[in-house]
Image (tube, rainbow, N blue to C red):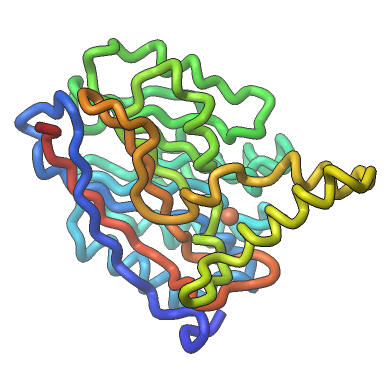
Length: 280
Ligand SMILES: [Fe+2]
């Protein structure tokens, strides 16, 4: 991945209004990294080190990592974890796993083991309170995992605002029965290939495949269409999930650091800083 055609590491800053945010948490700063794909090909060491230095320079209250630490083999995660162990957040570092981390039980347990070894609290259908008892953080299992359990949100009293960490943006569709104030995700890599003025190429391919799969009985095409990301409109950045004016629900999608075939074009890797404010 070369900055010339990908773009430099970019710090994206965004302010998110949260309903019922405790006054003590107004101004809370949350850093996010996603989709590292650390496998010796899809993320350079200088980029990884620059992203870690950028996050630490932010002196955030909480650091979040939203999955896809590896691509295929789980072996590189031990080395990656040694680097990620350098991340500093005043109230800790939280992570959830992505689909690539969950290829098999062996993949999942190795990634969990290594991240936890370096002090990263890695969640799988769990609720934690790093910012205090009035603002829970829910870390969900990967959306395609057999034990994905959105009902874990039922453990949180409905009057409390909450942050949800979930690798895939589409997870938001399954969470509509519960209150979600802000979901942090990755997975899309920002669409990877961005054509100025025309947008992201995967959305075109997706529409083409879906159209073709309706007239051609090729199982492979149908399978790809069925597994596709539904919300390419959430490929990156902050979006409203529901337009409820009383308790708005937001999703923020980080473009990630690493990449996947066929690579990136004009889609810069990202460090995110989210600042929470009180919804009027
Ligand atoms: Fe990914």
